[in-house]
Image (cartoon, rainbow, N blue to C red; front, side, top):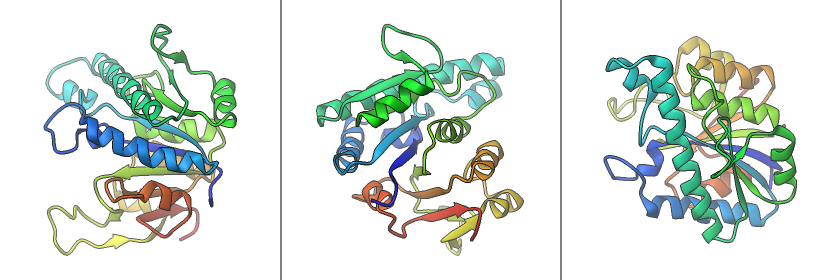
Length: 237
């Protein structure tokens, strides 16, 4: 495999599948099967999962909630997703630990950087829940932060589209997909693939980002193997 240690970012919406809300067990199991194949080949893998399938802090704020309160509710939603992923992975025989930035020791470990790295070295998947523990930060930023903390070789952002486009491919049939981009191009063109804080963190720490379609079979394995799928964002185009 091209990468020894990777950080996989999953959106909460990805766990919904075709459902309007919540978690689709079939999607969770499909992700677990893909991850199991990758881990069996020796790759160390950590996951950051969002909570948008249950609650979005920005949406709650827009509807009148205090923004910090709404973000904390969103963080709790990510823990629900993290525990669900843990269950799916362990049913595939993959030892998994959930670590949360907000302590809830009855259901998960508190986030401790050295412990997380030790789990990875022992072949366990680590799922990071509760974002970074602070409001006003997205789970994209959490993914970039955790990737830097655990010395990940790459951040994989698995989405519902097959890469980064110059505009929304669902609305514009002539949208163009980028195969490669620099961090600076993403920021200057305001492409919105991840928030600016996440892009800047990866840029400063020289961690490339690969954006690809989660629902194409074996795409996680292909990404870890370094196959040219999706869009790659790095310091050099």
